[in-house]
Image 1 (cartoon, helix red, strand yellow):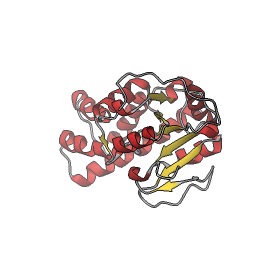
Image 2 (cartoon, rainbow, N blue to C red):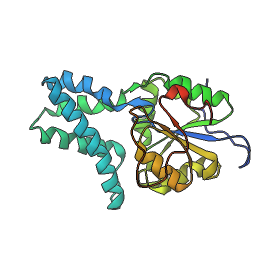
Image 3 (tube, helix red, strand yellow):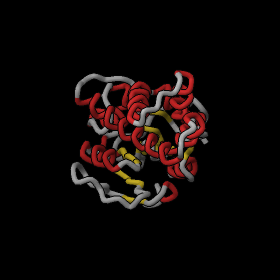
Image 4 (cartoon, rainbow, N blue to C red):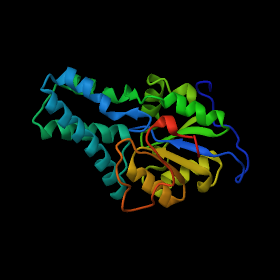
Length: 239
């Protein structure tokens, strides 16, 4: 188990057996739908409306990150998440107090880890690989979530799109990860449940493992995954 706050170590030369495993956070290691509990408790509305707000919130969060990157108008992912929440609430004519809105927003600091998340990180690490998070989240929110979800001690580091002021699937994010790890893109592997993230990383030159829990088809644009698993429990078994 890694010590909290341990810095990314010096790595062996490109071409060695070392692979940099870059795990996506939102939707891969942690379940974004776990915000529904906080939504239901805070809004006190029917369950079907809670589900609709949750789905809209996540959809707009991703859309706003794409828009921000395309418009060259970067905002940290925490702010993007807040804008998306405001849209979702307005879309269903909900107007909670500022205090309740903040209570909902901080649910993103307390997402539930998927079953087997910590074990997957440890298994890959035990095989001799570097294990980091690579996420659109800004560093502060990723640090809070990793700690609250119990994942921080299992990581060698946290890498954020914030460092290059854009968002995945911009190639700059994946290139930044490889540079930070001291590896070539081909010696890095993205592990993500998001098909668009897999398509983007593969297009940039990373190896990819798609955690396809819903048995969805791969994206028609961008690279196809070079390895597909159904759950985190299978990550690293044949990479």
